[in-house]
Image (cartoon, rainbow, N blue to C red; front, side):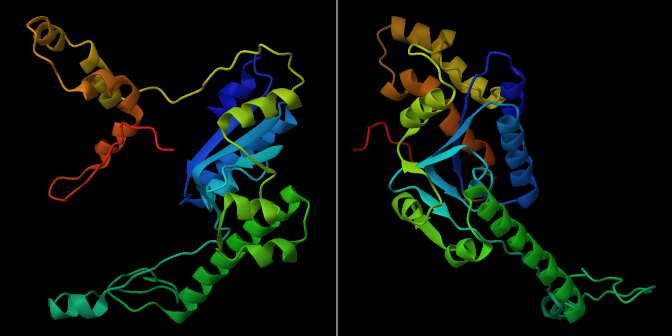
Length: 264
């Protein structure tokens, strides 16, 4: 979507709304690269941080022209970790074993039926260390600070938006409207500029939710004086939030809450 906005000749500035706790380095780097390419194309980019913009959420933000956060945004978490698990004892209790023929010292390195080989652990740790150096180095370059200065506030530490501002990880506090105004200022746009929202196409599930509002059966019931719950009229707006229901798995309890009020 960032690439599509950049290649649109009508795009003069881009606001990237970030609400993500991160999770995967490769995906974050792909998004960060598109942000950098957008800036290189002469289109200013302003990041607007939502509730959470941490770890990979900060990674994708660091190359923007300006980073704006809410005072209570959860951000930072500049760090990286990896996990490996093995279950040799558990499988042995079940009478399960494995065997094979090895052709090198690293053969079968990720066989979960064996304890982690210390040599393999050293390789994994080296990859983690490089990822951390890349993360801290990228932030240092983007924020115009030294590696040591960013390392001192990195190491996985989590900050509020206000704390991040004090530590130079964000440029100012503000919401989405403030970010849009800042982007327009950077692009030197006159007042009355249009704002277009780029969003991923609706999935089949989301289209189904939206269609409920115009469903013929719903209309018929209302015609007979049957008053439906108020939430039915709000399904259209709720569709993106209810998309998380797609991740529900049979047999696993899931609890979801939706607030129809406006918290202050």
